[in-house]
Image (cartoon, rainbow, N blue to C red; front, side, top):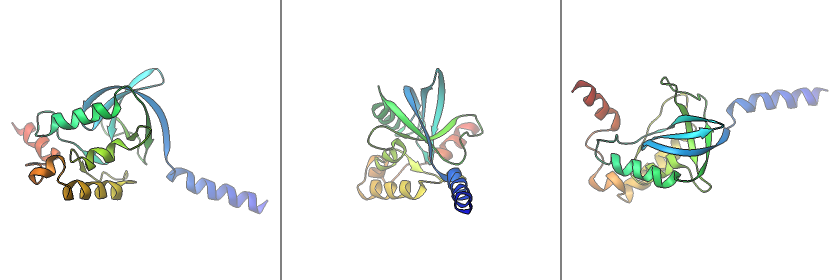
Length: 162
């Protein structure tokens, strides 16, 4: 009986930290780090966890959106969640996978997004920072020019003021 109780307690401690995932059908790209998918019978906006891609009107924004479209087009995707499942705008937060790789990581590795830490969702932050290191060393995407003139966050703030 004690063993069963210990096993139950061990499982209960592990479950909250374990990845939760589900399948979704790709519908459309909003921008480099946001997509629309079909979950069950409803369309849902998904914001990629741990990255910030240039905005549509920002330098490399079109390239980031095109990369995301090519990665997702016509695919069944797997959404993996971290600790918080929704952001303050109600968007679903996820790491997005096809059958081979993680979109969040591939965008960073291609020099088309930057890793960001938005707590408590930091499960793959180290992995995303490593992808950024590769992109910088190999001068991919915006790293060919030494980076963006403004981070996507700085760019958004400047647009609000204008």
